[in-house]
Image (cartoon, rainbow, N blue to C red; front, side):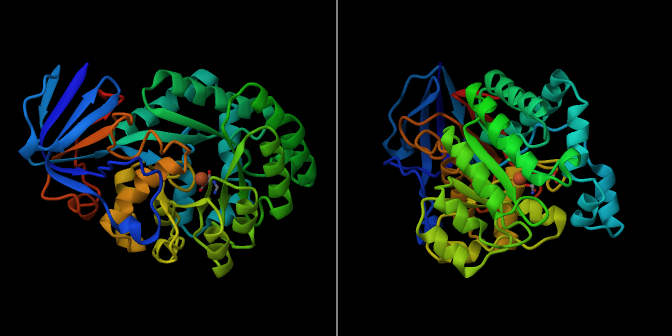
Length: 412
Ligand code: NIG
Ligand code: FE
């Protein structure tokens, strides 16, 4: 099966060489080919070029993209889409004055989701998560990382990871699973956090690694959750089982988690709403990519990650959704890209780089995803007719997507 897309108004993120990350001032460069064509064969991008140099190519299907933009699908490197039910009541409680912290302190928050998840069957969990995954693909996501972390027991974490494995098998998009082993201190370990870390290190991680259910290890490194010492223990145990660190850090407090993550060669550090100069300098001496989650800041009314300062320091930045029931009940990467422009002062070029190629880097897949490059996976978004690519973040909240192609096939 081959698809030829012709008369493309603007073909974005076109890379002749297989660039796998963009940093600093290079993030402001988004290569664009105007009046272009793109040829897809099976699941692969095989050719592209200008319509001026185009001579008839045979293809099973020809799509006329006159007036439309074509770009790589979004690479969402941080989500928690496997969860049970919702936390609408906590949302209302926050409107009425409680903080995210207040809700967690009274036993709500992550513990609320964990209780719901523990009481939900694997099939029901799969059904709920598959609906979310279907919806985000329709909104242009073509590769996704999915975390566990609402289990908080060995069995419930395994249940979540099995659901992720099933999503990976049933859906055409790339799925990268993460064991978020230490997400919150379970009620049963309220007064004995060390015993919970022992469980994570001695049982959860070895079991998950043995069953090959995760690629990454995550920890919620935060005051009231897991401190530097806990985080270090979990990261070390993960690494001993070949799970690469990719951690939640600096969401509410900055206390050295970024430096610790870089010491263990984390693939990414995510959230970073609070940042110290030391965090920037630790990142400068590492291959760890910072990941911003602006729709979480929007939903919780907390500061936005200082993306402008991160990029101006010469660093790379990725954008992800954080789709989860508590802090971001939305997986719309189009909104993420808009928010990064509107609230974090990223240019459209920077935001699109951050949500495509750098998002792919933050999942360890940027050699095959995140740009229009010969030989890469044919995952593309075809927009409706719009004036320019800058219109995507500008006209926020509207659906500009006409077609999503995953692995060379239209996604319905
Ligand atoms: O990334 N911060 C930690 N974990 C999630 C939210 C968890 C929840 O509230 O359910 C996040 O924001
Ligand atoms: Fe998260």
